[in-house]
Each structure stands twice: as structure tokens, then as C-alpha cells.
Image (cartoon, rainbow over all chains, first blue to last red; front, side):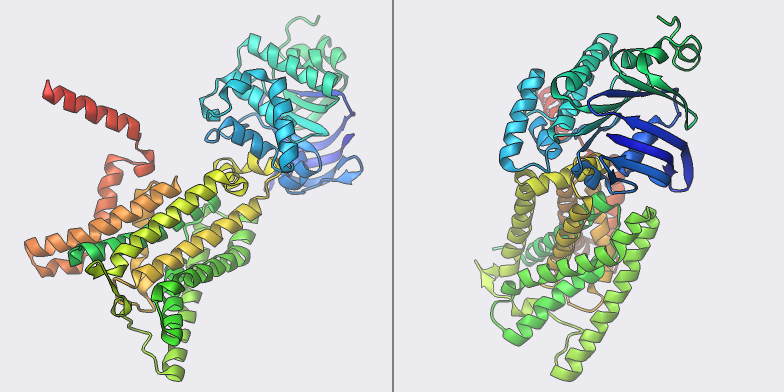
Length: 238
Length: 313
């Protein structure tokens, strides 16, 4: 389980998150939603050691991560798929997967690559192409595939639906649900497309201006009469 | 085989291509404009000079030692200055100024070394003509043949390292996206350290090669730093290959260009030699603001082909 306690974090001297308490239970999808500029990406960057943690604790299965460098966090089993720049555009797909599985042995890398390509067969045809030539949807698939290469305990997914057509967004969300259901991976999903994310999520947090305004079941937030309308742009709570 | 101006030009251009390639590599990995390239290049020359003076033989056999010593200077610079500053998220200006400070330290050490060699061993290290110890190959100086071979070999090895090895690929990944690379488990510290090993080595090797076409002095690197940067900037500061090519073009154009200008307008122009690479850099950047790396070569070739067809028809 990933646990965040009384977290204050930001960049250099700028504080962005205030007193964040968050739990990501094992083999569940925890969704963090909120408006633009709420600090959702900073939350993931704080876990990964990219943002500065001023106070509080980040604990993965009893190990404290506070301000550990990103490569050490990755080695502990946390896999981060950022919103922007989530693939190496100048590298081929094979090289991208190789970099994603940097910590694996040669044998493990080969097996994991085959396994991941079986999960995303659409990528097989482009294996020698540069990632920069892929479409938006294909890039997101590659980004998720790269996240899986690291044999993660926890995956941090940052707004994977940005700039995608609704149909592609649906497919990406289905893929994320499969990661939990078929592979048993724990997921912390940060999303602006709140409705789609809350539909597949188990637990949810609403982050506004760097503070948690709601925590509870994802389905409850989705159907919350005021919060869903006020902060998430969901017009009719279903 | 080569006329003297071309022979000297090839040596000079090869040396500049090595140094400019190193500057570019360090910039794209660590955002650092390395002014200590001057001192590293000078040290490269002195390592070859010292070993040749004491052990004799073929001076080219000491070039690998120059490379290794340059790498050591690079490691010291990274661990002592660059790494702590990168951790503190220092600005590009701070990073650059720190290397200038390091360069002044290197210059002082070189001056002390020269004094030591003069007083203790009665050598004359402050004005060294290394070309006097070169030999002839195919009726030309060996340097004019070996220097381009060295530059091409380094370029090929670097290309193979970056494209065929896991660590080399991780360097390319870190250059493109350091955050994603780090989040993938790649230790960027190791990548940056390797950049300084290669960059420092290339600077020192470039200095050793350079001493075969100009008088070796303690300030040799300082007098050439503008040309080194001109080559790197002409290359676009985006690609190592661009930097190596930029250095070669600047070097050859300066050496050959000044020769022709002196023939045309008189020897007084030789005093303005340093202006030539800067002029070439300025004109190229006016035409192609992102340098050679920013030129879309396939598009350019296609346009030339179309223009040619148009002329024919």
C-alpha cells in the first residue's frame, strides 16, 4: 500500500500541496480528480522525487520515499507515466521498451517485452519506428506499456486522456481497468476527464488548490450532487 | 600528397571537431557550457608532450593517455562542481561560470607544471612545436592523415556506443527526457558522469591533435576557446554529430579561408584570422538559426533536386 501523510510539497521554495493525506490500497484504482492547477501532477511528482517534499511522509509498503531520487523510487516498484513527454520520441519503440525495462536482466527484458507486446498488439507493427511518429492514442498505449515494463507494484498515471478523442479515451480507460483486474496492479490515476476516471475507480480524492476537499468511494463522488457539478464539470450526477 | 595549407587545415579541423563535439555533448546532457575545455585541451597537449619528452618513440601512442587524463579532469569537474550545482538547480550562467573558475585553476596548474619542467628537467615547455616530431606518410605529414582518422574513429565509436549499447541508449534517453529517464530507473548521475568522461577526453585529445598544427603554449586552449564554441554553436548545440561537423567546418574554413585571403589581399589579414570562424558562425546562424542540426537535410536536398530539374527543363 502507498500511504501519504501530512504532505507539504512544491518546487524549490514554492509550496503547492498542503497537508495531503492519501491512501492507495493494493490492487485498487485510486483516482485523484480536480480542476486545472489543483496540484494533481505535483502530487505524483512528489511521490516520484521530482518535486520537493517540505514536510510529511510518503511510505510504500513500510519504506519511506521522502525526497528519494526518481530512479530509486522506480527501483522500489513505482512506475510513473507522466502526462507530457511520456515516451522518448527520438528512440524506436523497441528502444523505448528497453529503457522502460532498464532495471531488468537481459532475459527478463526479452520476456517482459514479449508479454507487453501481447497486451498491446497494435504496437507490434511499429516496433522499429521512432515513437515520435506514433499517433496520440498509440503514444498513450506505448506509455502504459512502458509503465508495465518496470514490473510495477504501483503505477502512477497522469492525465492519460489529455487531447484524445472520446473513443480513444474510453479504450485507454479500459486498458487501465484491465491492469487492475488482470494483473492486480495498484494504480493511482490522476485525471481531468473525471467522469471516465471515476467510472473505473475504486477510491477517489478531490483535490482543489492544493488541498483535499473530498475522499471516499469513486462512485459516491461521481454521483455527488454538488461537488461533481462544481469542480468536475459533470452536469448531471447519474 | 596534400598542399601544406590543406594538410594543416585537416589537422586543425579535426582537432576542433573533437573539442566542439565534446562541448556539445556536455551542453545537451548537463546544460553546461564548459569553458574548462580550454584547460582540458591544453592539458591533453602537455600529457603527450611530457610522455614524448621522457619516453620518446611515436608521439601518437600517447594520445590515448591524453584522452584518459582529459576524462579524469572531466570527472573532477563533474564531482567537484557540476554535480553539486545541478543538484541545487543552478542556472546555465552559474554552471558556465563555475567551469570558467575551473579553467583558471587548470591554467594555474599548467603554469606551475611548465615551471617545474623548465627548472627541474631543463625542458622548454612554454613554446613547443610538436609538428617537428611528426613523421612523413605518403609524402605529407602523418598528422594530416592520422588526425582525420582519429576524428572519424571517435565519431564512429561514439555513434556505436550511443546506438548499440544499453548505456549509450540510456544517454540518448536522458538527453531527450531526463525526468522520464530517471523515472524509468536510469541513474542520471552516471549518465552525466559518462558525458564528462567522454567530453573531457575529447577535449584533451583535441588539444593533443591541435599541437601538431600550432605552437603549444600554456594558453593554447584559451586562444582557441572561441573557435571551439563557434564549431559547437554552428552544429546547433542539439546533436553531438552536429557539433563534430560544425567544428570541422569552422576549422577547415578558418585555416583554408585565411590562406586564400592572405594570397588575395596580403599577409596583413592573418592578424584577423580569429574573426573568420565567428563570421562563418554568424552567417550560418542568420540563415539557419538552429545551426546545422536544425536544417532539414532531406527537405533541402529535395528542394535542390527540384530546382535542378526546373533549370534543366
